[in-house]
Image (tube, rainbow, N blue to C red):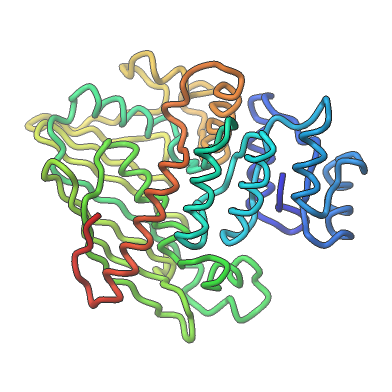
Length: 365
């Protein structure tokens, strides 16, 4: 692991999720650029002293040279620090599992993509919501034509944790996520890319153009904390996306609604084991995770019997397990977010910023 030392939120999430299905073991890390903090963090996680590094380049060289070297590295640093570690490990022939978004800038994203294209190692991006069982179920339903031709897509991701300017205090998460040099974008990159990735993953639609209106409501805030985006997809479908971190009463309100010529579906991340399926002219149906009538796919993506909640950590775990399968030569990794997913997210961020900066104009590919 690179990053994710003492006090880091997302690093702990990745570590827990990677172990859920007994497919991974954490054996090495450059958990901080500060040598003392790197050593202490490694001790916390029972990493042997000779595999506790304070420099990710040294770690890539050393692990690539070991007979028992790591199979993959998990990069859980702030956005601006994704590119250099990813490139170093790819060039060393080590598979990369990277937190989203892909990078802080288009230039960093381009460099990662070049390294991926020139490497034999795999690159996986942890858009964890694609690992939720009912999200994969929804994707299959759309592929089977159960919704008919897709016409409308509504995605939103609303939070309230930046309603006040908490970045001016001692909140380290807020400090780097509202720093444009470290994050690249605000709510748009942090949670908006999740919503954009989710709607693309489920529907299979590709956004051809968009119009965005971004705001920074926090006093003195240099990145967006709210955004409304209109989307036009190939084939004529239309969509709307709302991403906000200044919406009081919302904790982690990721929601997706898709409407076709035959039916519609609705899913809320905060109640992820339930999805509404509404065939045109018929009563609505409540579909449950792993429940009756879902076909063979449901069992592949669940770990415990219906009625026992699965959610955030298990979604991450599904990504890690699929990554282990892919690296081990099992399956084609078709459901895994990859470099293309990352580049789509970077296009979305850049296009929204250009659109809003121009006063709300349509931006096409």
